[in-house]
Image 1 (tube, rainbow, N blue to C red):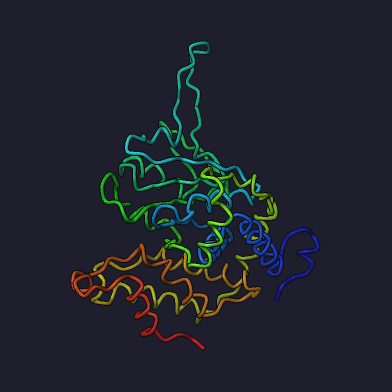
Image 2: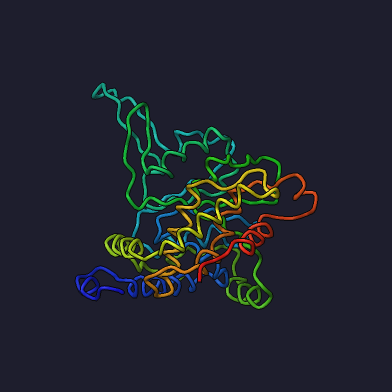
Length: 329
């Protein structure tokens, strides 16, 4: 049950989390037509403190979606355009010698923010990609042996294009495992595409979120309270056991060469709590797990050669694992 006294004190309860999410959806809808699934995943990641990888062909509004999402939050926003010549120092920052004081001074990079847009993250070499590993897992960075804390709300929203093969560097498994979701952003349907062209076809220049009337809906205090409320969502032992059995099943099937990690189980549980809260529930159910399993697992599992030859994909195998794993009633 929710505690109304919490909301009265200025901190959202579960109903308040749903209200905040609806307000964010409404603001994003001023600029983004369609992509409801991607928006829902961003909201779940926001309230469960997870990172998101958006994958889709060019021109499907991945970058604009991330910008509009950030604009609805009263958080410090940073952006890095990943390129083949990008160096770790370009992201983290570096110590520069000050000749006037004869001391080194840290010049902070764009990673020192609340929400970082890592645009086309697979266009930079592994050495630079690795600069995000510590930040994504521990929300801190180490520069020249000195450790610096990042904001508690630090979140990475990364984009990548699955089509091009030249000039890209696949993300290593260790980094993929730090993303809560890999969300597939597809082309809009015919009606949505007509609406997009009607709304934006008069100019080749894309407007900024502020120009579309998008304003912040959540301040840092409300966000922290909402995250705390989501953490209070109950997962009964049977649902926790279901999550663990589903994750372990990825390691036991012959269809996969590599299964999901324990981190995946923890993240799936957190995401299930957030999905329940967005639907106004203070308890998670197996359907929350089933709805998010593919997004949590598709970038963590490696298909076996046999499965690839048969033309199967990660979604097919996750669906089969869900069907074969008994869910609690």
